[in-house]
Length: 430
Image (cartoon, rainbow, N blue to C red; front, side, top):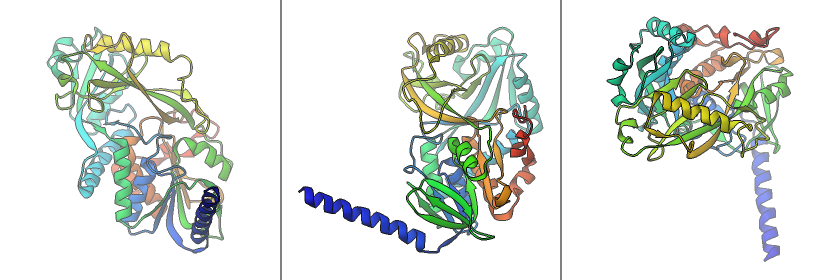
């Protein structure tokens, strides 16, 4: 039996090696090679393939893995940003989410209202009001508790001196299902996808070709390359270009809290409960109860520095208990009596953010010897998933045409996302 097992193992190794050699020696040339099959890479693959380009999408782990930033039960979509360049992107992305769902034949986004609440003198809230007006987003402002009491079945309370805002552009996205949708659409448009393909090297192969080599010996050749590797951005960019970008991975905790009996219907999407953001200390965000019966997601907008290859899955940096108690107090302040906060969250899941110092994205050409033939996208700072469709289209345009026509059309200056903003200024746009 041991002999048979050994022979079978050797045959499987030979088959694997031959498959790798076939891919290496085929001489196939792709128009665009995309590295990283999370939401950004999957959307970029779909957009480039839709243009009729020959696309290869590579993923270092299994497809739909839970080791990065594109998995889990929910992400929110909202246009209530204090920075003026994001609302136009959300509006465009919202339109592209609908197009992709129509093409796929199923939905990954549940529409809701978006609700923001915090002290009235919070600069972010004042900027949100201005940006909603600029982008013609209908906005309701509540500055008294009596006004707010009529909204959301009375779920929220407005403390004295606080302000709250409500917009119709909100919603909950199913992330793993969404990534799968865009990968399926990319394949429908004849893209090639390979997982378990960890990239070891990216080099020029002659004047116009980019050669991508994997740790298992495979090599792929393309005219253009797009890097969407999330928390691994800093490592990969340093390895291939020598640039040290300030993109810091954070180990983030997603919390689910028990809803008190009788309040489950009013805290659901069907009951009109919104996605929301809490501009207090600590800053929180939440979704309607829809992932797990009787539970509601309310989590921190922060995390703890980590190495994506050496994460400690058992802790949240040592101070998570104190932060958890603060979060519980915040919940009771604005949603009194509806959630069991005394024992803390009853379920915790892990995720990762890739933070820049200014919390703005990095979307740029790699430059150097690669010029405009390699495009970089990373540092989405915990607020990127909703932007997947519009970022994917922008990355496709940059790779194929050398410029982001969509960004121009919606009035977004791509300089705000440039790598050059960190030269001589480690804080970037702050």
